[in-house]
View (cartoon, each protein chain N blue to C red):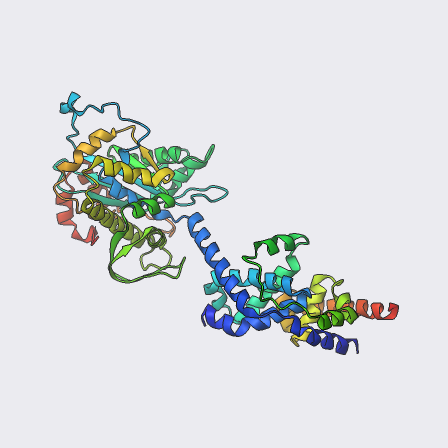
Length: 353
Length: 159
């Protein structure tokens, strides 16, 4: 009997139920807000690509640090003559609490001494390397180790990564930059969108975006979204690295079309657009010297390269350098004969356009 | 099934369920809103569940049971805009509520007990399904329902 009263009481109060229309609209609004916020914070790592574009020269333009040799005529003999290697690191976790940093995209931009064209070399984040103070670990952990202790800071993360990359490749890193997700978005917007050419369709697992196969112009948010995608790509992080190269190639094309690279004023404007999302390393090679390299480039169409890695080992979470091809590749890089190496190993070249 | 299709058919029943849980249309809206935002953001996972509706009902029930006292205030402030179309209880309905003692007694029950009552006597679900939604054993469902009924009977005697 009390059960019957209960049933009756419930049914009697059904009319209290509000209408669903406004509620549904409120749900959609709030979900959209949270989705945006989530994208902003979960930074997807691969921001790094950006840098590559920068790799062609940008990283050195930090406005608040005027270059000492601002009188170019003073040291004309000092112009950079050898090959250049620029390290671009894309990190995620920007703005997250507690802060964490993983370098998800690590790109080495190699500019040969003959200035024929830039090479984009993706170093897999899961590559097994020796990290000082941490033993054998993934390459991505170097940034994390450097950037989180004793306090969160991008600069020590970059420094440790640079050391690990220099040890790994045997080449000197002349300049470099760290890019967060925010920096990536701002730079993309500063050049008014970047055209990316994909061989296959990519569906975002973070948003509802679908990136069709073929060329498309991406705005800042879409670029970040694309470069975050890894999980559902057939080749996982490797495909993501390739997409990062495609993005960088598009960014370079865009920067060239807008005459950014050869125009220091525009370049500075582009770099300051990235704001705090971009940290640059100007200890190695001063900006002005790097800038002098730009007009020397015969082609700004980059060659995207994959590091030769071995088959997955017992530990599937990590990849190892191919025991034969890997050292041969680094030797070619160190001796500045990548063009020859590429001719012999066309399978390691990624179509970036 | 897409999120849109799910919301088309299931939003209204969920809202009614939330009204029975909370006894208050505003709180019910907040509860459903919070749950459905998470449903929308994680739709892939929800859609993969064997029974998406039961999965969502479990999310909503957990949210209700865990909702801390006082946090209602924050939730209400979070609501995007005041909602002018919300039906205001008429005088008639209001007085019906006042007369409805069993309804007010319900609000004094622990939330898990109230949820069990709603699931059995409003949603007419079998105990096995109630146990699944509440995340407990079937025996626990039965004992909390009988404890809740005993409390209500005691109120009857006093009244």
